[in-house]
Amino acid sequence: MKNRKQTAKELSSRGKKSKGSRDNQPKQSRTTSELLKIKRNRLVHQLQDQAYPNALKTCQQITKLQGEERPEFRILMTQAKLLIRLDRYSDCLKALDQLDSIYPGVADEKNMITFLRCYCIHKLGDSKKSYESLKFADNQFICVGHEERVKKLLEAQILYKLEKYPEAKKLYSELLSDSDPNHPEFQDLNQNLKIIEIKLDFIESRAPNEIHSNPVFKDSMEDLKITNEFFDGQLFNRKANNLSKGVKASKKKADQSRNYNRSGSMEKGKDKTAKSDLTEGNDLSAKENNDRRKKASNRWKPKRRKRGSPKRVEKDIRLSEDKKKTIPTSISQKKNTKKKNK
Image 1 (cartoon, helix red, strand yellow):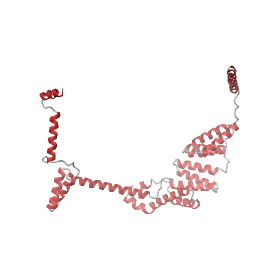
Image 2 (cartoon, helix red, strand yellow):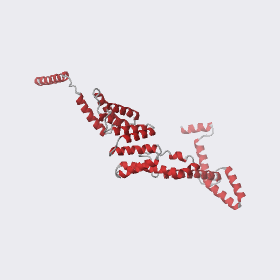
Image 3 (cartoon, one colour):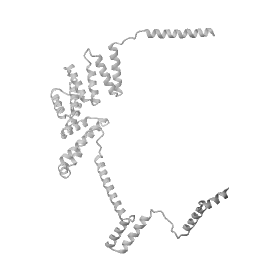
Image 4 (tube, helix red, strand yellow):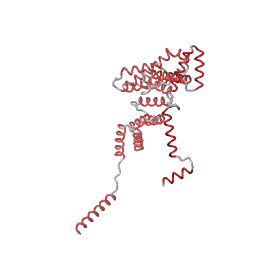
């Protein structure tokens, strides 16, 4: 037993010594290159998982680590795109200005920077300025492939916002002809094109007549926006159905109120209806109508037995007998009942 206890103590002391030796060892500090590698890998995973706020934080950490040197162009570009994703358009414009100041001579990504800047200005509400800057960039740079498609999409959105519907329709039809029908982008483009066609139809054919007849109609049409979820082919049909349902409901309420006044539930209503029916025409028809109304009004009332009926008399007798048994009429009767009970 003693040997076992000694061995246990020795093992515990050894473990303590080993832990203390580990704690005393100094931690190895990582170099900036190792930290940057870890942060880049983390950024890739965050972008794949669509964790955009966390990805923006990692981008900012990478730029801080590269503070003494020049920050990487790709990191600054991803930071600007993430700010657009998070609807921080003014911050994105600042980031793009910083990118232009650090990398003034980058010709490959210059088009994308101008597109991002135009998009931010458009989203902040100045569509006219964004269109002018886009046209200025179009004269300076040549767009090929994916960049040309991005430019067309952006230009179509800005033209729609500026109410230049024929030009926007032309661009959307060109984009639809090149897109794949199985791709989700095809559905969005098709919806946007339909909205523009509705707008054009309203302006060209229906607007002159409708504005004179109904001035509010134009305001209701202005609510249409180019979005992925807004447009539906049955939108106007739904609105018409809702209006017709509302009209039917109001008619039903009016009919019910008239029937209530004509029914025999209220005495004033009875007299008025009887007088009007008698003055209108036949007395027999008026009496028949009154009888029907009385039957209709009495239909929901609970049926009561008449006083003279035998069942009613039997019930009254039983109730009186029960009262006599249970409730004594005088104090002497109360005393007698107590004595009997004893």
